[in-house]
Length: 120
Ligand SMILES: [Cu+2]
Image (tube, rainbow, N blue to C red; front, side, top):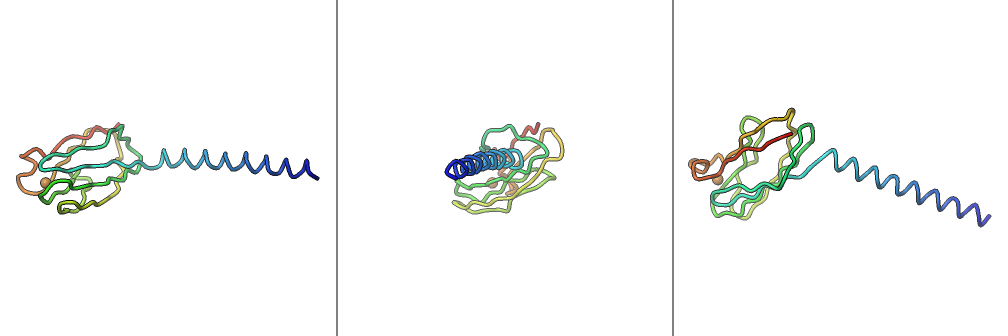
């Protein structure tokens, strides 16, 4: 009886760690968070690689004083947010390529709020 209980516990431990491993792996593949920090007048994105076919959550933080947004041209964009605010949106790039982004507030792109994301 004691031996039987021991086997059940061992089996439960193995099963538990298997589930944990699968859970971590699927989370890693299925989604990614990209942090976009906005200042006056610059974007800083957390390091890639940015992969197509993966749902990306963009966490957009305004650390500047002016109002800003993050607009991936023709694809998706955050709402405009005031100083100190954070907003998120999700987007899945359908194919690899170079995607231009900028801030939609007039003159902000000219002042430096723009760039290109390389998606692999
Ligand atoms: Cu801006």
